[in-house]
Length: 312
Ligand SMILES: [Zn+2]
Image (cartoon, rainbow, N blue to C red; front, side, top):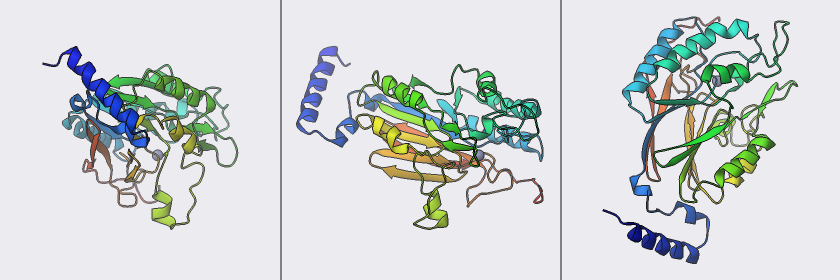
């Protein structure tokens, strides 16, 4: 059994070692508690819930496959429904109902970040009035007060971020973390110990190789596909143990290891918007197993055969 005295002694020793070797790697050194940390999480993204083409059946199967993983935590990566952005609230109610059937079938602690398709009536194209709060339906359906918040689970600090910024011009929206949220991240991190592993999740990627991998090495990502102020965000974590970044939006399964952080783009439950695989990524979700600072992950498919007709 560990006594407080032993714990303190080791902590002091560790502090002394760290003080003697300053640098980026400090915060990733194994701390006293890291050996006890273990977490299995499912990250599912881009469901694009709707009611046609047997998709409610697909979502039920996806939920069953996620439950079979017996995760401690389930995080949705946004775009829970499809086309909320340009639709009236009334016209996408049945899509929310379809998504919530999947959400409510999931076991354990379930959370989600907001995606561009989840902003309801942001810029309606059917002549109806735009919403003065396009996040309200998401908050009500998910039962959250705000679209960004944090919590602790199994020794990991989890931060869910709202990466959506409505642009209103031709681009309609862009990926960004606004000033208010940057200030919140800064203050939230004050109560997070330097060594504690942090997981952040958001819809739009902070870091991706998608454009270089699909369009060539000099390709530039559009503002609606990446977080335009990603360096401002990452800089806030420079003295913390940012272990894992979970991101959606691109519908491909990808991982990047930059410094000590693993960035995972989580594929899509809907694949190519219910038309089959997208750039080789099938309909599925990501399972991440964390053991201290070790990150293992795999992309799990749930065997869906797309039924969306090619002309729709
Ligand atoms: Zn999507």
